[in-house]
Image (cartoon, rainbow, N blue to C red; front, side, top):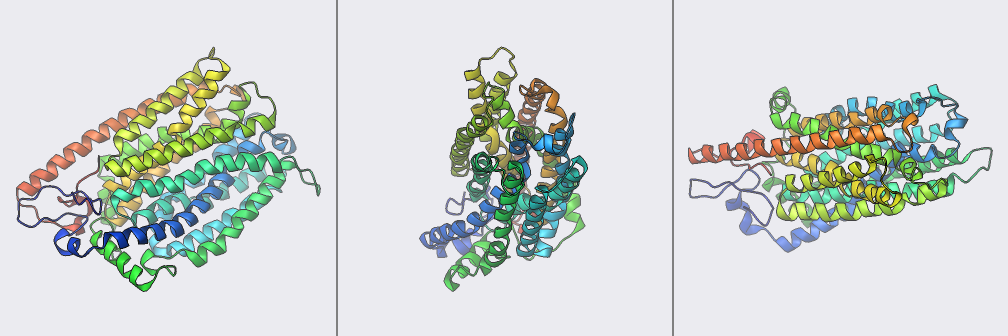
Length: 487
């Protein structure tokens, strides 16, 4: 194992040690690891700050309908029956369809243009939501919002794989996903203040959408000016730092080759990979947890007996804080140990315990509030680790891009489903939804275990190929016998 670069090397039968991530013989002796750490900190400060802000606001602008619903939102728009649930779900109809498309287009359109355009589009739609008058207008805006925001999260995760080594993915994705947890806490505090406004002829929920849309809009010029298409071209790096980054990318080209061109054969190769289907279906179960809790948490907490809107919104803040802290710890441990699936299973178990407690009709208020924390502890870690695991084991670029897009397409379909499972008629306990979440979480745990078995068998096969004399072929992506799958 190349401990310095975090890339795993399978045993070789030859005299020269090589692997699919790094040519140790050519590069290792010339690496200044202290300088590399300094450059990584600088890259983290610049990239993760931009990505975190984009993720925070995109997630907030998509899910703040939960806070709006605690005010006069449904009454003002004459929402009846399950109109609200349909409005929650419809955003994912276009969101999931466009995710694989934007992933493939990231390298073609360039990250700078794609993410700036997405930010401008969703900001305008968020501002426009403040002025919708009825259910049909709300649906129209939400459909367009899903298409616009579909470029952000998948492309951020893919950009990370274009920049970092495989054992650096989890911490960086943890940093970015933590902003999602922060968005929940931030959104609760912001909604608490803004939904109390009734000035200028606008109701509180309208001010919430208006202000949040303006904040998002201000991010667009920052993204355009500060986000490089490749980190080796970043204006905030010195020439010597750019040279070091270029060297890192060269060492890592077995995982990401910047010169790779699109080929349909990579898409076909991805579709033949059983790991794609195991992780995609598992992600559906995982995202059931994510979208159910982030969208319906204010109502679930209100169902504990805190009938005040203010109390319900404020009580979400410590839950999201716990989610963020636990997520940072899990991400760091995952990269440190270079393991994904054991931590993924542990976090799924935490979610399962929480859902079981919430599904017990006679469970006391204190136990139910504790259960919300248990679910939140696994909330972001499961989503991130499943994607990180996929990113580590799918190579080259377009196979990885398509795989991650498809996994998120299937996973985010949960967002389209939950509005019809966590229905207004079952609020505030949502017992039917809790039973569904228990089943989905159990399914994800079983599929994770099955995928572990596939990985172990795949690595055993690669070791046999090396013993038979297989040469190091970085151009084969994850088909390279010298590129070990991450467990």
